[in-house]
Length: 420
Ligand code: AMP
Ligand code: MG
Image (tube, rainbow, N blue to C red; front, side, top):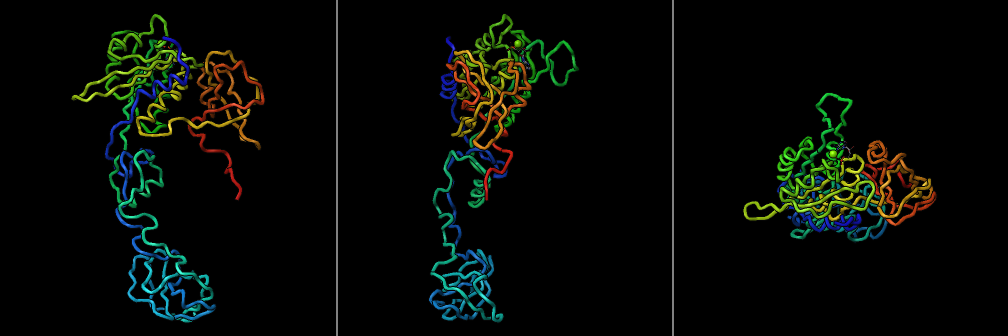
């Protein structure tokens, strides 16, 4: 199999996965999920013409000349229904959100009036018919589609769902994701520190990358580099929608992941990508036949090197999970930045360099986090983003404009970013 470009590998992954089925979830638990069905308004909002202000409901024809004095018929609070019709020379005191009384066709804000007595008010401004009235149904109309399938649920969307009394929401199911680390050298969290071993960081970094997408993954632990043990762990992992296997995907004699997983029926789509870090990344799928319907398990073989595994997750796994969750925006946001130093690059592989970003007058500046070895996890911990060096590049010079893929959290910035 040839080395795919990042773009072609991404395409291969994205063509293989599909949006998952729907499930019903309590409104309170739906933030960040994606609507699986259109949502309709179940009434007019507002249900009748209401006042948009605290003030007086008047007949605009009565106050053509400034000033005029009107008799107050009643007080209408939000939640009250008017009991009197506003006749010539009359008005009603009305609060924001209260229904307009018959006869009135405009609202005068309190600021444009002066109380004369408890039953009389002086109006100091003229008004056009319809002023400061929210019309029945102007927010939403009974029966209309207010949210379409595929909408990502934000706080604003939750407000709309609450408005239409959608206590249970049909959302796209979340993929069930398993994470398996492999390697004889690995020492897990609950094991005592052995100076000869390598702490398992990948399971936890990958866990957090999955969590950052809103999914709670299952950690399957560490499988030793032994085909039988590996097969046992992989079999457990293949019961999930997505299995992330870290390590053992290279061509070393003890890299058993690929042959073992193929022996379990997984069809590999690729296992090499022209990228740095992350070269030995593999992707395959297992067709599952459950009760007549077929469903796939997607397997990502991620490189063992901690930075490589995280970079590959961002390029291939995150967009795949986003498709499965019903999102239409699949990729991390990119920004343009100016490079503060030269960067060496040999053509042939797309490189992802960990950078910090600083906001300057004319835009962002990108600076490498330092040594970029694929095992140097601190370079990832310090990074605001991944700077992309195109495959064909022969190197970049200080001052050049580059593209940086923002990592989680960087949608927030240091300063407020606008002038009032
Ligand atoms: P491999 O891909 O299995 O050849 O591993 C490449 C490098 O990544 C080796 O130095 C491993 O020790 C390291 N590595 C593999 N798995 C993990 C892990 N779960 N956590 C931290 N480092 C790992
Ligand atoms: Mg290994």
